[in-house]
Image (tube, rainbow, N blue to C red; front, side, top):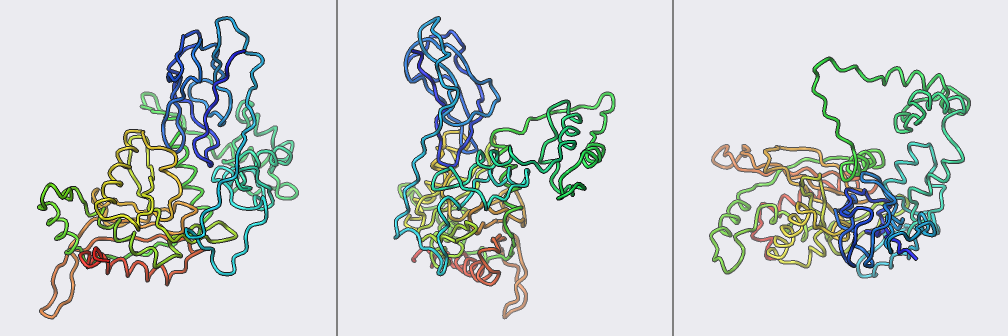
Length: 448
């Protein structure tokens, strides 16, 4: 019997993978462990290997398709062997994730645990629910630990649509039978009974959304939104739609940071400290400060807030594939040199598409630094379910009143975005003030 090749699961939150390219064609001979294709998740790019040696009998998915995890993507056997008996897509067998140790987390006082099956939802599920007008809080999830995933929303949406029958037909006619994307209907107030979207509403939307005809000779570059870029687009939109974001801005005296960095660059090579950057120093300061501000080292899960004792410090990394956010595990237990080395290792793994799915999950707080690009200040976007993210800008001279008059002192820009659903402005301001003090006296912070 032909052997199925399954799309492997890459982390509990990954529901589909993008099939980038086939490395083996139908009819090719393959060895066990040989790469058959390259696939991409929102986390990383990896290869799918042959489970057994034989002949690649059939591809079940084309390049560029989104493939559900654990679906059969290919078959291996002997030449001429039938593949009809292979299941199209076996049902995933998902074990619930282990409960975190009590020493690692603490729930906020008075928070009640979510009802069984009624808890968190994946970003894709929330997006689909918003598109189709589904009340996600009413769903019983089939994902790990009762998590609502995309297929749960689609199952409910299949039985009820925000469009009337005529509206649905008009949408199909407007797009050549493909149907009008529900995302384009967001914000449209239906005129039919119950707020449903009628044919008249669809026709009005189609008229306003008609694309401008390109002038002769216009250069057009069409880039499909897929893979990491698609996930970034979905998650940034979901972040802004699902959280109450408030950004606080401050600056910190950067003289100590610059002086300490200069001393490290001149330190003995055997100490392996010359590569420590100002970013590393800020990561270190965050790792020591966050345990004292548990509301910012936390996840907001809608019906509860989970505060973590150890700091899983995420760092935004710019890569050719888009923004990636690897996590420095238990950063509060690491030395400055260890944090610096791990940050560089993870950044390199992201750029080289070698980072694992596990290394991109579980962050409790994120830092993003655009200072090297000359950005003075900006508004960082939250990485849900985290409750805080720090944006770091460039170092600039700032006038400071002293005993002998005004002096121009280098300051580094700090922008803290919080989820106001979980963190109030005052605690966020106190945290940002404490961070500025820690950076201004980084040599003292290193002694903590």
